[in-house]
Image 1: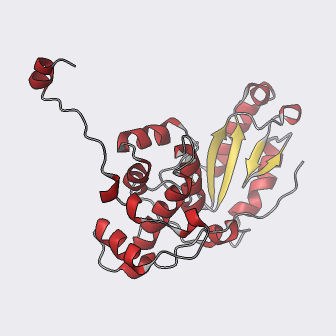
Image 2 (image 1 turned 90 degrees about the vertical axis):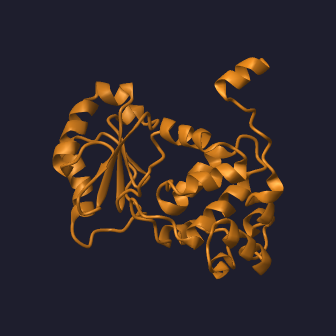
Length: 247
């Protein structure tokens, strides 16, 4: 860009990020190295970078198994991540940072951990991956799979692909929204069920199809839908992750 244009527009070229001064350079997390937790010195540095007073929250940050992640407390909508949650985001991101184009993998891992991609996680992921916040937000907003707030205890995903639409998938969707009393991308008032669209489950021969907590069900009509969701809506119903029949 010509110098006079730069002066006129007030534009300055962005200087390279000094990696030695950011969080990433200070976090040889266990999840990246396969060992134990972070050292106290690293925890203190990270706490200082994040303007936190107590570094003890960062001690013994380890990769979470699926079972552990399912039991982890998830942030409520609009609530900030605590110190341990922010450290966990940094640890997850660091574990993937050396892979080509790691952002999608990081976002999937963060959502698996917290049930959503909290807004407070965006600057942390951007810093570790040496991206702008706008770049990270752009990917999150492009893919409907990523949530800004945790889903309900159960997630019902209705297929909207052509095969399911040809087998009265739209009618099933209309019935589902009436039965649950919510629109797509919403959660029932009691937090029991989140209703979402999905595009092709690969179950076209048994259309219309849906997923309930990752379990595939085919040939779903209004009556079958009601039978499937009734236990989820009942007080004291099954917790997330229960295995249903795959039909």
